[in-house]
Amino acid sequence: MPKLCKFTSPADGKPVYVNPALVTVVYSFKGQPPDTIIGFGKDYMLGVAESLEETVSRLEEATAAGPSKT
View (cartoon, rainbow, N blue to C red):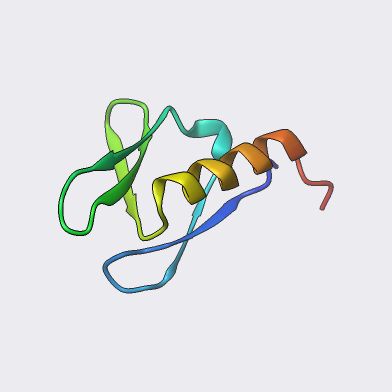
């Protein structure tokens, strides 16, 4: 199983786990404060509390690390 990335739900502050292999797009939706959106294909979007830079960094690290051995 691929390594999952842990993010924070902006609505309730609970953890949200994302499989980086399924992510197709990450973008910032303008607003106050701006929301970071992770897209999975064209049908599902997930908002996270982390900044765009932090989100991309976590996803890149998990992808570079490859599948976990546990």
